[in-house]
Length: 59
Image (cartoon, rainbow, N blue to C red):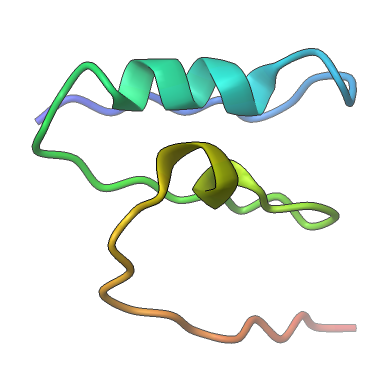
């Protein structure tokens, strides 16, 4: 198993597009868009969602 994580960068630099490009290279993958402000990787990749959970942060 290989893991690729993109963890930070200035907004608008193309992190989501880059992640979608890498995700398209392999048919067997798990992807997670954990962007707090605008999680929009699903707009590019049209994934099949198997699980969805609400997030509740601490103090």
